[in-house]
Image 1: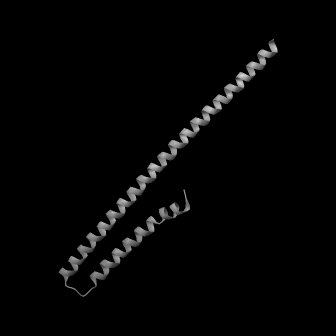
Image 2: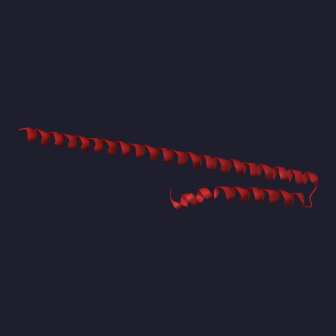
Image 3: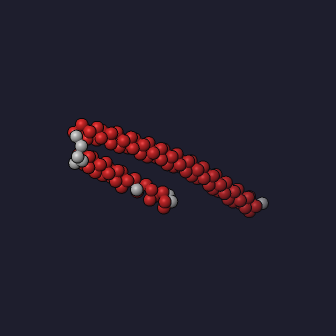
Length: 111
């Protein structure tokens, strides 16, 4: 993997922690704000809906990236299998050529 991909993968967890901390801070700020109970509850509910939506969006992005990585890994494995098969065939051909050369030399000795 490239270095920039490693960095972005490691950043997922701290970003999630930051978002959760921000949401918690927003809720606490609302609880201590000088509003009526009803207004505060409505505001909290609105913020919770917004946070839930952002969470769903983040989940969708993570799932999409995970699927992309899985597809890339599958493609890589397929390419490597093909390369191994090609090397195997070349090796088998080389071995067969060596055997034929041995047979040719052995038949020359008999004559």
